[in-house]
Length: 178
Figure (cartoon, rainbow, N blue to C red):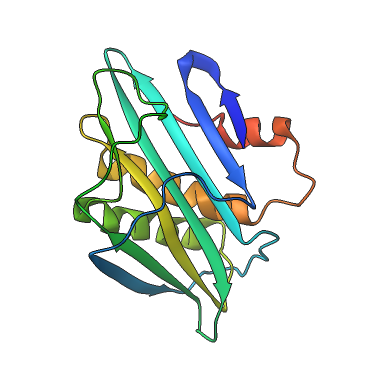
């Protein structure tokens, strides 16, 4: 895991080729096929991001991770598990008084897919694969559809980074966040 301290007190944890400690059992799933404008090769199979972005007295929080599995689909199949009942995630980056729970609320599932669709339209995405979002955590106060939309696109970008990606390259990827 890489822990990054960015400007303006923004904090990010990144997992490359390893799973974050936030797996959960889904009560349902949302699935969609996304067809990217440009096909981008994936050099990794697992990537995850946890981020906390302060905005004055409040902050945006999300943890999201996925595994890319080869499959015979025309495009990329995005599978987003949903589970409202999560266990507390005590080691989160979220600031008090936010309470973070492992799992992904249904209200964030479409945002995760929208983030993938936007990335596929603008920069491209891998194809012939199933992107299974297997790890997630959300804050009761700091999470929103917009933060999960941002993070899902970033997870796909992490999957396409070269194996020898430096911490500086990771910092550059997250430098545009607000």
